[in-house]
Image 1: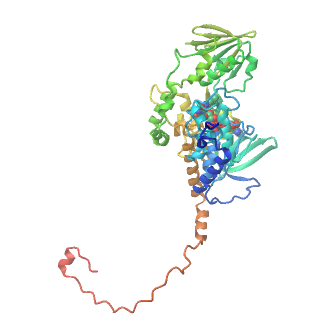
Image 2: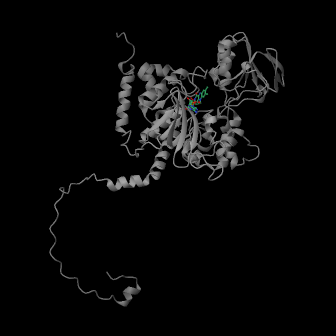
Image 3: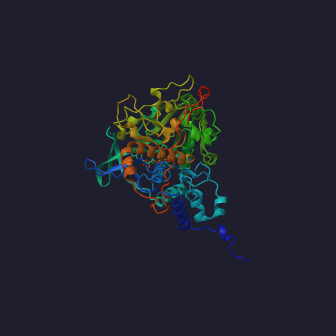
Length: 509
Ligand SMILES: Cc1cc2nc3c(=O)[nH]c(=O)nc-3n(C[C@H](O)[C@H](O)[C@H](O)COP(=O)(O)OP(=O)(O)OC[C@H]3O[C@@H](n4cnc5c(N)ncnc54)[C@H](O)[C@@H]3O)c2cc1C
């Protein structure tokens, strides 16, 4: 009897084997294609990039990889240190992803680039079967591998501090890194800046009169250890609210009060129900009213917190789920926070608001020069009565390649060189620009579209290359020219056809 119960075919093959297969797959697919983009010399002493991507989270990585597949080189800038881009290993607090493990995420159609391939190569097929949901930090490990194996050019610890379209075919980016300040020009810029990437946390007005040390937004980097022994209030009941509450409880909070405006938790994740290929590929082409209707319906239905995250909170005896508790006001009384709700007053030591994110271009200094010019949906669309939705109203009104549009024609030449590939693109394009399920579809749409724009812009260059193209496929030795035929006798004189034939439409030959 064998000592190893795992059949040889089920043993993990290791990442090295997977990477060889991936390299082979890419070679078979002709990825990348032969170089076709014009070389760009220094312009005004600055490097000129074909595409600069701001943000090296999964959207930025997928966009860079999809562009690479089209033979377009992209440089990614991220202010985070290497391997700590996005929320997964920084501010996120859930134990596992919400997404089902089978989703192929940023794999761009390559089986060997999926999370599953990466996981099975290291831990084996039985471990995959046993896996329930993807652990949060393991997803980050997969993204780290993805970046490395595809050689995505990410410049970490580099904040983009200004994005300035110049109207001459270039967008100027100001950069700040530990090496100092610098500038770069890019022909196209992709904003892969994440869920809060066109604004920041949505902060309720009642926070204004409180000491900053008395509250945090759930997306802040929070030292939960300092909540030990405190009475903590968590405003909201979405996924992040549950994650914050659970982490506070696990860190020894004396009590946690969830202050939930609704009278009940939503049960159904309508966003999941919406995710069919027809929506992924067809949302952009829907009439405005239907785009608005579907996104507003999903927003208004609210996404429930995941089952596991909710149990992670409710298993603690010192948590209270307070429904119907809209926060009407908060007063600081010494070190106490007195929180007024329709169900009475709560006396707390610390508040975590899990109130989501808002779009506000003016809140981000890097967008100062474009903020007044970006066309939002509210600039040209009025929703039907009863469908008001601030998030949708503030969403940028994007073109087919995620490009920004001007509020006033001519107001900001070159604005359409900036492509918005983050969550706020959802109303225009559907959920293809941030979340795991359709990120590859969005990245491919973006990359193919940018390839087309470059070709149109560089048409004379490509035409010149076409004229100069002299790769002969025939040497002229592949056939024998037939001798000229003997001189043919002169044709007989043509006779005029009988009148009846002309009348019937018969033409002389
Ligand atoms: C807590 C949490 C849990 C989630 N769980 C799931 C889930 O289970 N399934 C799912 O499908 N989705 C989930 N999402 C939604 C979505 O998948 C994530 O938000 C994901 O991180 C989006 O990837 P991204 O690349 O768009 O943005 P991010 O991962 O946020 O990356 C954006 C990057 O841009 C960089 N950046 C921004 N501005 C600048 C600048 N000016 N200069 C330089 N760098 C800049 C940031 O440093 C950041 O690294 C979750 C989101 C959160 C917040």
